Image (tube, rainbow, N blue to C red; front, side, top):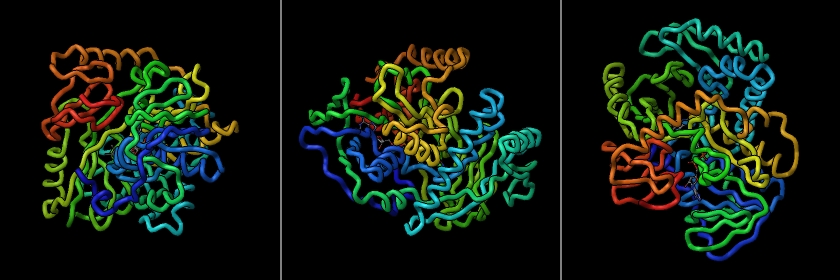
Length: 431
Ligand SMILES: Cc1cc2nc3c(=O)[nH]c(=O)nc-3n(C[C@H](O)[C@H](O)[C@H](O)COP(=O)(O)OP(=O)(O)OC[C@H]3O[C@@H](n4cnc5c(N)ncnc54)[C@H](O)[C@@H]3O)c2cc1C
């Protein structure tokens, strides 16, 4: 299903890898994270190659809503409580720097970049918003309280981050692609030490590897299958709906997001764990029918993102024993800034430089046993579900997704079309 972005932008094509190859750094996966890593390594003069299973940015990146913001829900109070001021400050600093870097890189690119204020609104919990503002104050950042938002329903207020941004993600990528060393239609199907094997049986020998595959594809290290799951969300693009001044998100679970693009209103939300039945376009349509009765739907799409158990992405060394492997995942639906953070951080690590913000994103950080147990219970109960279709990733029972005609894995989020063709990883082969 085409998003607004893929409907009107075709990216240049790259050849598949047709012979064995040696390189210093192999980037696996060409979404926003992989492409930005390639752009950074190119600038540093590093010998790298990027292998993309299908087309560049054909995964979650082309179905994003492309808000570029350091405001990631009510994250700062949570970070302060759990990790303290130093680590919370790193998260804020890295994401604000990412917004700024997009601003610089977008200059001169025809990518619809525009400065926007970002609002986290609430329909009932003013106290939570005030606490978030106080948490940000502690970190040295001035967010303010806004109460007049121009949304078509009542709110108790919002936390406003000034000078964030939005853009057209594929036009931005089109602007930075020239000169990058990329192979498309080149899926990595197995990895052994420094060797990656592609679906055409070609061997890539690399001193270092960056896993930018959205969900990491190797299970035997890092255990991402235990500490992450995927969540699907939906977007509809509306014509004749009221425009919004800024980018908006509800602080409450299950609330909606709003931004304008090309004269349309993008209404997003209605999410659920991949493989479950809640939410979906119908929920968004009934909301639109109530609040934008004159609007007409121009297009709709759905996508999923990787969710970590403590709300912080995993960016850094893949696993303690794999010093030469790096990972960028778990973006929590904030993958525009997180991809930029990842590209800077991983480039520094690949080049042996210290990155001051690395500790907060470290994939090897401590997880709470309660969170791990919750995710494990969910996965095991899905695994035990009776189904004739089993996921080749870890054997979990697949569920039929009637709205999108696909077989979806509730444990880790792999998806397959009705004929069994792989749509989304971590699986690396068809049913
Ligand atoms: C509905 C929705 C709205 C969102 N809105 C926003 C927003 O407003 N702002 C924001 O910051 N974030 C947003 N996000 C999140 C953001 O879009 C994602 O976090 C980001 O696009 C993920 O980028 P990625 O590069 O990690 O993954 P992807 O874009 O999925 O790229 C991964 C790539 O790896 C390739 N790959 C996978 N396996 C292999 C393999 N074995 N070999 C080779 N290649 C492989 C895939 O083909 C794919 O192209 C949203 C997410 C959703 C679902």
